[in-house]
Length: 213
Image (tube, rainbow, N blue to C red; front, side):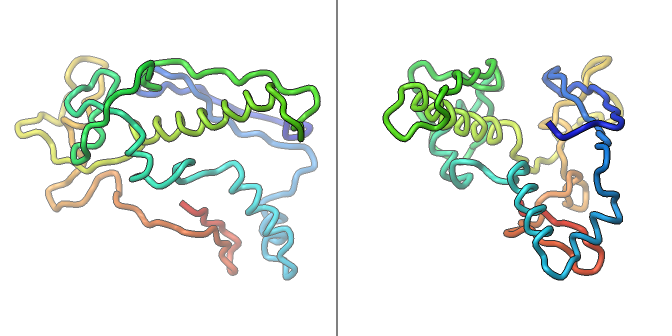
């Protein structure tokens, strides 16, 4: 996928919902060193910089895939008080009727993609390609559903009387809505709200990249 590998190191971690995921470093043979990358990023012609930014933006997304957060909210059904699957995510929005056969993506496995067409992307009508295109539409909507339910931060004060020195039970982490994130001075311990970056930029002095988000 990346080229001939010189070395690698990885570790498996567990998320709050017990989902396993891996963090990995991969060293590619004959790849540019960090200093060579910096020098190429700061080249006067800028072609390498454009190619690098285009590559990073193709695999790094800091926004919803199908619209703004308000637009996504209009499509995601929820129950205001339930915390078993349909999360309390939009307390100020009107309740949306749950469509027939709707499944909460935080409680289900993803739908695998259909097989690829033998002809690639057909120009004429092709049932296989249409099925794949429909899968991508549903996939993007599912990703936005997951982001809205699980990756949108809402600042909360701790529940009065909460004992921050120990969790609810041995080995368990205190629920975020109980612990809260607001300090006594009103600042957020998770550093929200954060700056919105409309475009990716490269620092002309040190070559550091700030991704849009």
